[in-house]
Length: 241
Image (tube, rainbow, N blue to C red; front, side, top):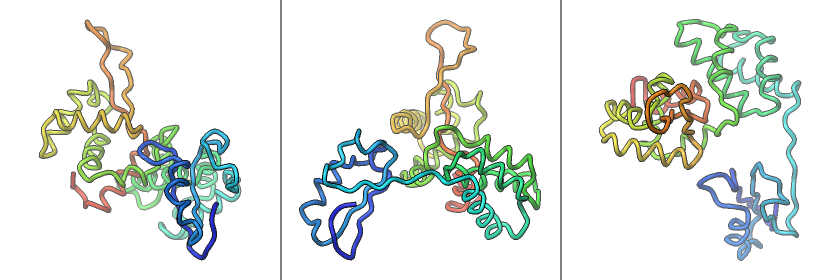
């Protein structure tokens, strides 16, 4: 944190793709820093990203397993009702998430989506398994994904509805998505390459390719797909793309 005053300007996700680095934050805000303080939040080692020498650095440790369990239990009770998710299931998600609240909450929301899709009134072990399996490691925060332009978000919504086989090769994947959107396949393909460059999705080589030429690539989401699907429906409506 740097500067002084009653107002704090917070720059989150500093140093991540499509965001500014801490040096840029400092350069843009230092000229008027006497009127407020600024706080840059990122995941990289401060010594490796050019934090100004005189700037105080605050470390944030991952949640302990017990603290994360309590957090998840409180969120589950508030969102689902008392006892809708067993304490054992909550503790299992907290242990699996290794102290990352964002990952744990994404898995929890994904478990709710899986249970709802199956018509279940409570989240059982199968729902928890599905919620965790839908979170890749490393995982792009859903805040970044949902902050994308609507046409990219809708493209991703179509992508997560495709099976792994239908996400390859990239051109065919784009054509399948374009069939559901009012855009051309070439536009969707451009979106997918841009999203891959930003780290939102990843192009993974298909290893079982036995035809001539270079192996095709499959498009894999790098975010929590079930949680994203639920948030997408909440924002755009069920059945929207």
